[in-house]
Amino acid sequence: MWDKVKAAYDEMITNWNLMQSSDLDSAGDDADRFQTSFYTFVDEMKEWLEAREQKPRTTDEALALPEVAELYEELPGPLMLNFETELELIVEGITREDDARYDE
Image (cartoon, rainbow, N blue to C red; front, top):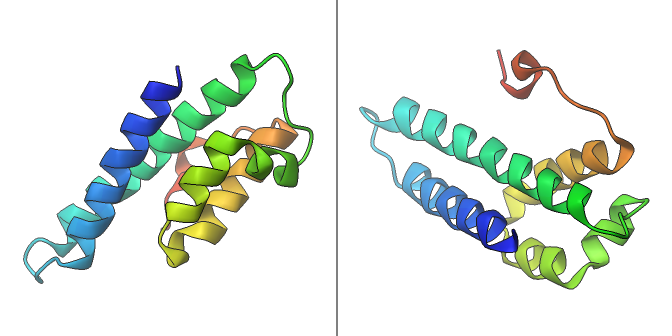
């Protein structure tokens, strides 16, 4: 199951890097692709965390898990707060509505 999280993470990072080097013509599409891949990664992380025998009770506990810590340390700085926010929602058992995921 962790392989799915890692694959989603790798795709998200690829899309992040692509978005960072976008030209004006492709910027919107690249941003949409990144956003979709970010939430796919979050969904895979949620599934993985919920399948664990011992679920983390706090965001700090989740970030202390070796697998999560490794990915977190590799995250680009601008994504850290977004990831922490999503992780907090996962740990607290809060499910976002699909509309709430996207900036309007």
